[in-house]
Image 1 (tube, rainbow, N blue to C red):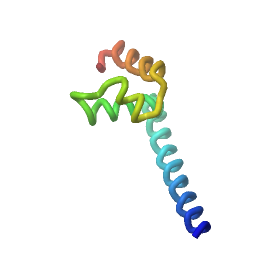
Image 2: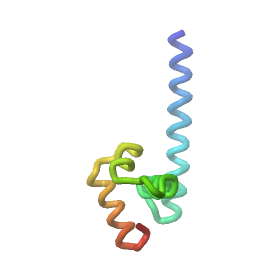
Image 3: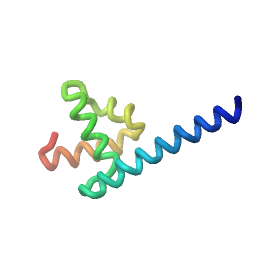
Length: 79
């Protein structure tokens, strides 16, 4: 059973890291970083209840990072 759980865990992480790499490459090709891309996604998915706290919680980012992302978007007129 231990070997099976280890195989499943490895498969999960391979999928997770692979998906992350795809998002990072796409974001970079559009002049974004992964945190900004995922913040934009959350703003779209939760248009009426997207708070800084929600973004911090969902993306596991510190408040200062999210504040910087949101300030940049605000400066550009996106939020």
